Length: 194
Image 1 (cartoon, rainbow, N blue to C red):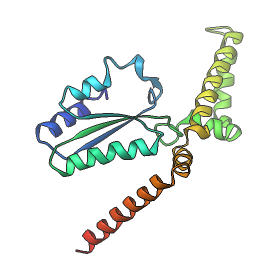
Image 2 (cartoon, helix red, strand yellow; image 1 turned 135 degrees about the horizontal axis):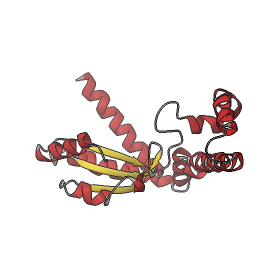
Image 3 (cartoon, rainbow, N blue to C red; image 1 turned 180 degrees about the vertical axis):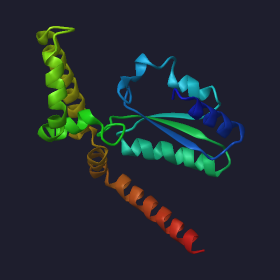
């Protein structure tokens, strides 16, 4: 949300009424930086400034995502132009393939091996903070990584498990959802064959 290319895309999509649906998966991090420390203002206000409809949803609630996306898709298909979905969620993995902290929590021995020598060397250096302060900082970092990984990998944040629980409790909604998906798949197949 802080890159010029995205803001230019939102502007042109609105000006030209393009059928664009932008989805921001917001886990409060900008790769390795907490988003609030590098982001000014309010995301909803930014998007609304372009005249875009803005849907703010719980990104872990598949039903909420489905409903918001359905409205955005219908709008786009009917020539209404772009829409923006802000989905608050957790990333069960890092922001990019190979995000080291999450790999370390899953396979600590394997992932820490290549880092052990540089870390040991930095801890034994004479310059800078004392070894006690360095070890404390390393311990704090590992605690934060474990806490983030625990939250991200928590069953409560698993969107599939959450959707299953919701749908098992509401058989009518499940039947309606299955019928909708079946009809959309059939329509897509018919269109592809036509």
